[in-house]
Image 1 (tube, rainbow, N blue to C red):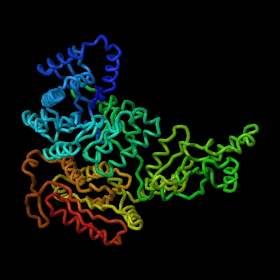
Image 2: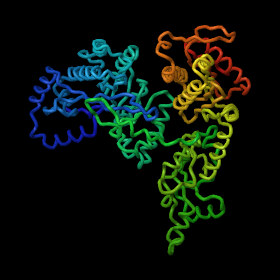
Image 3: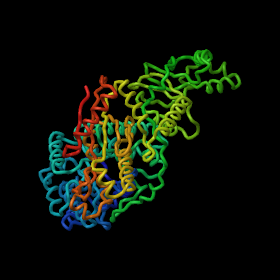
Image 4: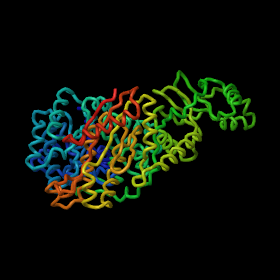
Length: 603
């Protein structure tokens, strides 16, 4: 029988143990003896559970733990790979899955943790007649554990024989409150299909793509594409296998903030994490808005890969302001031929005679920076910094859907970034340092002029004046700052914009199609972040006493946020003033809505 793939959630130590055991396989018990050993382990419930932390490096807190099952330490089935392979051979998969699940829940209940717990499950087991999804719910109810605390991980390493039945099982799980994750994305062949079919809440990138990511351009581009996709469809990415500060730095730069790996903690029987490793956060540069790579793109006539070096040099000579020549075949950029590279070749003895008839493909810089036309200037800048530790590239290639569009220069990029940051700093709100009215107006004008499709959200703190009067302006400023931090950490996409009109009024511009669910999460997070300012008795009764506008004392609701959203469809004819009116109307309606959210559409 074919051996099953490595089970989701294994550490590299597990793999090494399995490899070492394979080398001495003749000394191991027979398959029959291992089946007997497994039966004894299941009968006596001798499965132990380890927990590895998943850290939110943005909030500097433990987001959850992945539960990893092990056999007894004195058993040949201690290591996870051989434990589950034996269950496969002995046809005891469902019994082992159930035993592992119960052991995990018992340990979780013992520590009374409130974080998410990620539980690995073979997708087939969710449909197995001897297991089934209802047993999972019964196990939770027995221990008074909420389904919303559980994330079911399904690995793409396991073949799925009936996707229709699995989707029904996942739908039922979601209805009960469970969250869904895909593990080991990139380890097999079905990951993207599974992602499309199940629409998970979390996707874990296989550790292969994280290991040494700071030294591998292909891995960075692969992960970057997954992050872009996840932002568009409203899914959280988790980077597995982060072990070094260099890997962490790149992963954070790619806008991944949920991290799992030895860097923050190895699997342990007692859940814990080394959060001090993410305490020393780098101060971010002020973010700029409104411009993308296309705004700096200038079309430079390319040459093909088989063009002679002599001809390419003639082109460069005729254009003294061009320092690099794009090499393009069938519309796809291959790299850049730098002026300094040709001078280096020609400067050697007999260099011109030796090299001028050779095709330029032999001399191009193949690791040239290639960016999409819609990449923000901030992201282009970060890519330039990340790409090479030895020198700063002078040029970058701009593409649209993979096809050559033009070139940009680092000099023009830095000049534009500097001008934008000066503009933002000049008109920034003094309390939050977010862009103020002038940058907000400029951003709106640019988006409407380009005919972009985006959501314009007007965010306001409801019942802020009573809070300010009741607790004082210092607490009021703290609440405003809390909201500004939450907005910045919630809307982090390349096309997202967060501005502060003044007082307790903010605006957000975003292309996230899941805007409503994001805003509802923002409302919950806001209240959680400020509820400590109220006395417990006030929290319990849900109001405090204060004076209304007529000076009469009455019950005042606790502070919350209301969000009015206007969706501008692409090429909308709406003016900036009309947008402001619609946003004010949406905000007014959101204050009346029970869920604090109201949305309009601008045709």
